[in-house]
Amino acid sequence: MNFSKIEILGLRGFSEKQELDLGIPNENIGSGLTVITGPNNSGKSTIYEAFRAISQNSTPSFTEGRRNKNAGDKVEITISNNNGEKLLLKTTSSGGSETDFESQGLERNNVKFYTLPSRRTFSPFFHKGENDRSGFIDQSQLPAVRGSDYNHFSYRLFTIQKNQKTFNEIISKVLGHIPNWKIDQNDNGQYYLKFNFNGSYHNSDGSGEGLLSIFTIIDALYDSKEDDLIFIDEPELSLHPSVQRKLLDLFLDYSRKRQIVISTHSPYFISWSSVQNGGKIVRTVREQNGTKIFLLKEETVKKISPSVSNLNNPHILGLDAREIFFLDDKILLVEGQEDVIFLKRILEIKNKSMNGTFYGWGVGGSTNTSKVLEMLKDLGFSKIAVILDNNMKVLKDSLKSQFPDYFFVTIPTDDIREKKKTKPKPAVEGLIDFEGKILNKKYDSEFEIILKDINSYLT
Image (cartoon, rainbow, N blue to C red; front, side, top):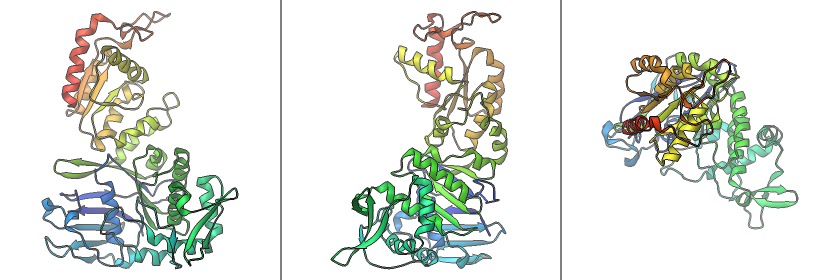
């Protein structure tokens, strides 16, 4: 059994019901991976809280600060499986903190998610105790205060130690080596996690948050079973980019047969292979009337898929382009990398600025513009300014008809910088000379108007 979606109403910023579709594992790499992106304070961690609340063993309480007044001062969370069965968690009365579960074919004992919060620090000294995976999930509760320490994880350490060989094999895939660790006890009777770094010993308090974070993440994976659902909030925290890349590879492998949901600020966790195989990318946006969830549609994925393997323009959906998922809005779309470089150079010379952020290194040619716009539209971007060369006026009119809410403009020349005459191509005028040093004063006033119009639209 897999879970198809979760619906959220009334929790924090969710003043209107929103639904999140989940990747369904089909044994292809990354098929069960769902990646939640979006700017700060847009609702990503609230989605984590919804998964935590509906899968815990006892009925949670939703404090006054967690309930959205515009949603009737009540909370409703519904999880659905791929058979159409549902489990509903809702407050018993408007304006109250207490809740009830309501089964609509899906029983509570079948909704057991391993959820890992973004704050994964725990007390360096702890008492002896042991928790298997099921018991740990049952005892995990939605904390009254967001950001509470992850202290009950210490009871998992004794279980991990019993399965150290399996655990170490998996953690080495991310770290590139097996850390030398064990549980020890001090003379006061307290236990602690001890690391040996080339003969230098540290407890968990002195070993660094990155290593401890990896410990908790691997714990969420190493003893999981097929069809499990695992939610990890901000896996990138305190991790070097090289470790993030390896961790993504682990997620992609595990999500062949498991559902893994992550909320992240890191472009290193965006995988186009996953999306092509059925994984999901969603983006949360905080609008005036509350949090909205936007999903990259399957038909859009089919359109942009050829760009993934574009050997001539690998940057179209590359790392710089993936950073777009984490921006608030106000995107500048241009044809290619020269446009990004020399538009910035022109603005620098003129001591001016544009009120937007360039999409990567351009879309890899004007013919890709509609595909990228389709993707950004799916993900809820409302302010996009598209800058095309003068010889693309026909394309501009076509795109404007297809995307009426976005802004389109052509520069007054057929290229951003001049092109010298080469056989058999003639010379081409540009807004700046070939070296990128001298502006073409002939088009200065026209460019000033374009700049003013773009900034007015993006403001």
